[in-house]
Image 1 (cartoon, rainbow, N blue to C red):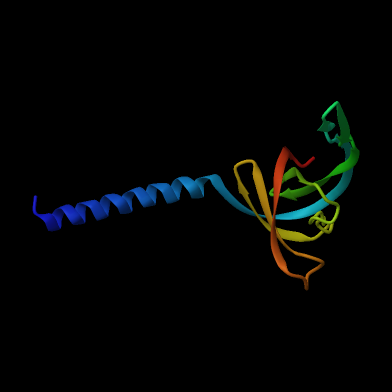
Image 2 (cartoon, helix red, strand yellow):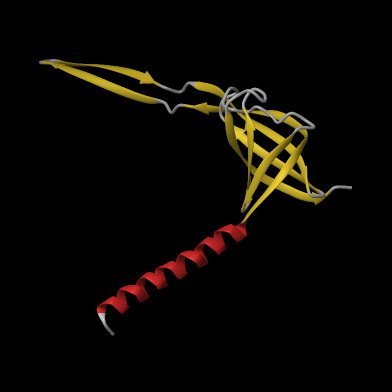
Amino acid sequence: MPTNLKAVFRMLSSAALMVVFAFSVSADTRKLTVVAVAHNTQEFDYQTTTPQSSQTNCTVNDPSVSCNTTTYGSQTQTNAVYRLNQEVTANGFRYKLTRTARWRWSSLDWLTEGESFSAEIKGRHMYITCHRGGNQGKKETIKYEILDIRPVQ
């Protein structure tokens, strides 16, 4: 086979693989418009304790030894995990979504009930596009984990 034909064959094979990959990725992604229905936030407290350690320093004087031990650690600190549960509806289904944060101020804004948002489902996650702080704020896409999907009754 001439080298030009080999190059064309390789290029066509690569293009065919890219088309197959694009279809497999797009088949897993669904775009929809969701309406926010409800939300709630929860705070879960937990404690961490640093381990205790000791350090001993000794000095030797000819007839005697003098040692000094210092102990560090063993402090307990209370922390919290914040969870936002969001419910949205789309195309006759109700989606229960969740997000988790380690800090209260780390983007746990909820969607305003009754408003519509564009969304995309990829696997077990829903990505909702909204504006931070209202319709005039910065546009952002928020990732939620999908907990449950049920028909609207």
